[in-house]
Image 1 (cartoon, rainbow, N blue to C red):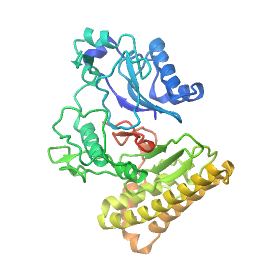
Image 2 (cartoon, rainbow, N blue to C red; image 1 turned 90 degrees about the horizontal axis):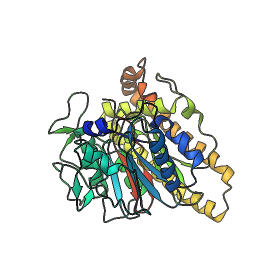
Image 3 (cartoon, rainbow, N blue to C red; image 1 turned 30 degrees about the horizontal axis):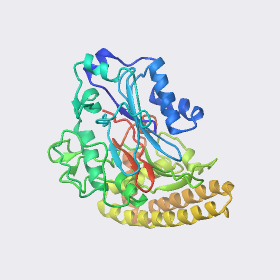
Image 4 (cartoon, rainbow, N blue to C red; image 1 turned 135 degrees about the vertical axis):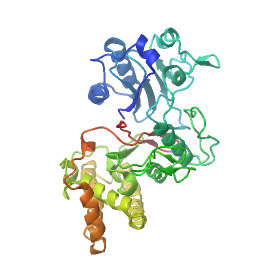
Amino acid sequence: DATVSMKANDDVLKVDPYVKNGIAESIMTSVILPHAKSAKEAVQLLASIVDTQGASEGNGVVIADNNEIWYMEIYSGHQYAAIKYPSDKFSVIPNNFVLDTIDINDKENTIVSKGLIETVKKANTYVEENSKIHLSKSYGSLMLDTDKSGAYSGILALSPNSKIKYSDERFDFFQTTDKKITIEDVIGFTRNQLENTEFKMMDETNTISDKYKYPISNQATVESHIFQIRGNNTNTMWLSMSNSKYAAYVPFYSSVNDTFEPYKNTNKKYDEKSFYWVSNLINKMGQLDSEFGNKFSLKLKEFEDEMIKTQKENDKKIIQGTLDMKDVTAIGITNSEKAYNMMLETINDQANAELVEKAKQQLTNKTDNNLYYIIGVPVILVLALSIFGFKKIKKDRK
């Protein structure tokens, strides 16, 4: 996923500071993807780079192949830990280290740096639980409200019967739920605005407080995507531009070699020929008028239900060999065009004319640096129950 931005506590960084020219998020995918054949090999390669050249920042990284998921946290200039992710858990990961206790002697399922324990002992931040190092308590800092609120609502979204409390200092890394997690559940997760909690969503009129918290779904989101990895040619990415609250998820098979033209438009100002800006306008309309938002949400559900059904049918055809892999690019473009036209139809509906103009006033002539800064939702989702799914996160702009 490359990556969830994190930072070690100051005491650790005095002992093992970040390296100016070390590995960073900006280059990580380009270095790893062409040179590793498996998720574990990718972690080993990334670990060797941190060992020899160092890391310029802290990160949490999810790497998956057709068979397994690995999760890695890079703590300081030269320290890291990675685990093979179990098949019956899920995790919600904010911009904060979340690994707790691991068996560093389990060479099959963990990969750790040589000075992992010595570094925090030297920094006087070492915390041990059940005779094992507690990684997030040793290397991390206190979890901010902006991180905790997303993790809290996200866990409850996927496991409503969870016993977690917002007052908990930290939430367990491995979470369980009593039901199969579906693609619909993951989509709902990305649209969560604290409806399943005791809190309300903060906006431009208020700040974080005991009553208002930072939601997973927010206006700073550039895009969201969910990966379904199933070990065959049906591997799929579901992509939603802008804030997914009022933006359609469109499925793409991993072997596509082209995409719908409006995705390629990177204009920094509002442009109706840009998939991002059209999605952004619809989101602004939903933000300004809750009644419109509720109605458009029904449209989204109808569209996504059709996409999920069609995708399952195409999956069967691919597995049976009756759908040529060269056709998947055309399928992705067709799906994108349907979503795009649905949004344009809504924007051009005369019944929405006044709302469209009001939303455009807030977007037109306003440069959107979101397209050039990696910011947004402070939560990454890892699922390994029925599908492998990752909610890509971006850095928070403080």
